Length: 387
Image (cartoon, rainbow, N blue to C red; front, side):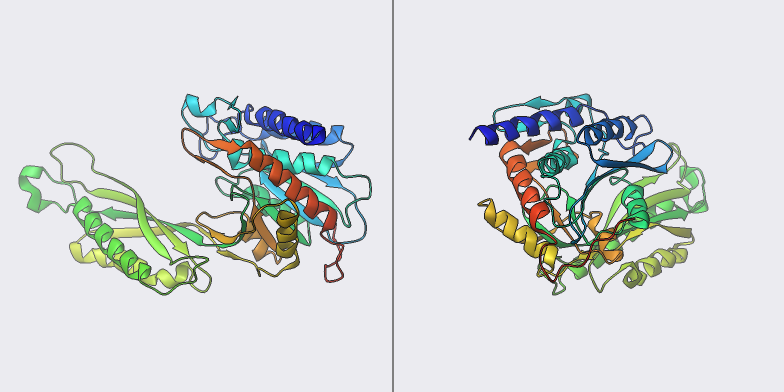
């Protein structure tokens, strides 16, 4: 009981310390703190444990901090958690603790889960894990995932757990996404002589309606319950220049969610719909901004079985599910590294009131420690790899 209370106190203190460091992703907000300061905190913390520590720089001022706990000659397990957060109003950046919860930006997404992984690894006895344990605290997950992309070019784990808020469910799949920017160019004129102009907003409005109809048809498809249907929605529209002028420009951002076997290339109808705007007399241009693959892992893969066994050992209900959001687990899958997504529960990611359940932090810690001490000890597990 004393040991459990001590672990609980350490988890609270470490989560609060991490969350009080501004690490708002500078790609999302150039005024944000970025990952350098929190990365330095994690580096010092890992070094104090006597771990082998690597600091890598996927971009200037954007560190990955990697700690290695040496184990036996079994499989190498990586725990991946991101250092960056999204921005928010000042109230969201304040960190506080109640009896059951920690509140503040990043406590759930994902500094609480990172704290659980760090403390679980710090409790391992020398040589206790069957294979090496690698804790990767990465930058830029909230924007372009340059941190995990860099990790996977230099590290070759046999399996991974990606820390994200899952309410301690084991996530074995989620949709991918693509972002398409569209610009409609019309012709300006005085609104009193509107027929002399070509209204770009009118054309974009028709496009938005047609895409909504396409999304409705996609929703009617028979789909895997793990992923749900592919989807499409317009997330940003901006147009017009001034009062009394026919708008000659309108821009929109289109978000596409994909599932295995159905990627952004299957959305040729979207591009065809965009290109059809020339019938209105406008010129439409489109550009794919980013494309990320969906994620799927066999629910019977060794890492998934190990996570299930760990949850059962900690007395938690085992739930296998899909996630409504995208994670860096898809990058591991693309690199042929089996991964699951797992983390504590709470509420309010990317909102004004983000909080993490302290009991879930304890359970996440216990689950991760169990996986660390057991994964790689089974004959079917592969042999670990180091960079």
